Image (cartoon, rainbow, N blue to C red; front, side, top):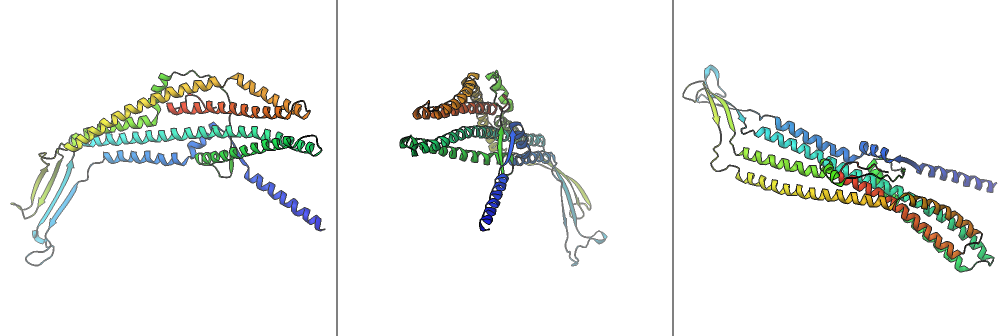
Length: 422
């Protein structure tokens, strides 16, 4: 009875463990196209940055508004008869003045233009944020897929080496193999498992980054779906450099900032022209005539302050920004040419022959396993092949990742999708 109870508890524990494992393996298999869509819809940094664009648009509305008119009054509180606010029968003093500021030299239009420049800058900065986050998304997506493929290589070799360790251990126990062979295989198996732990650590880090970019559930495991296809895309570096000038948010933001600085010079020069204030005043008793109504016009005389300092500052800031744009243009062009060269090099390194070679190497691996089990191949020979197989497979995976990174670098340098991700 007690033994049956123990078996029941053990079975129940196994069922719970299996359910827990299933709950924690909520796998999200997703292509890059779908990941891209989820990223654009859910990424919190992008959503926050959109509000900055809308906020800058509100400043255009503000710049279009006229200054409010100003009204002021002056009335008697008391008089000689000790009466408060006595205005009966035309008594007491009432003074009312209303005035309106009228901006001259097109200041209002220039302020609207600067506000428009601000919107262009914010929109370009948003596009640059999108470019950077999209680049990180593609890199993380590619690296995660590559690490999962590396993991399969290690799992295959660990399973094979574990079987060999068990077989060699039994053979050693009956005196058919040496202790050296057992230790060598166990060391190989331990090294493979240690490397697998490091791969799992990297996968865990990339999972965290992708979940943040895609705003997905923390319990999901993201499994990238990549159909690897090395397509030879003809590229014109000079044309792509010109395209980058129209696409890259960082370059456009600097260019729009230069436009804003140039418009700021015009505004500062206009600020040297005095604004005019026009108004009217009503005076009941204190003027030379009762119930006086007068026209008022006022403007400052530009004798000392002609906004010289602000004009000079605006010119120097614009000159500095002009050099920043030129520097950005040189960097942009170099980025594009370098990305095109790297893409071509990665394409050359990864060709169809290498893919066929990798498939044949897999067949050879299975054949070598059988040969070793049949004792047609010695242990040192098999271990050497074992290491060579793993090293070759990882190099091919690294070349695939290099091509994917080259595609990401190329699209990042141009600021738009030139070559579709794999």
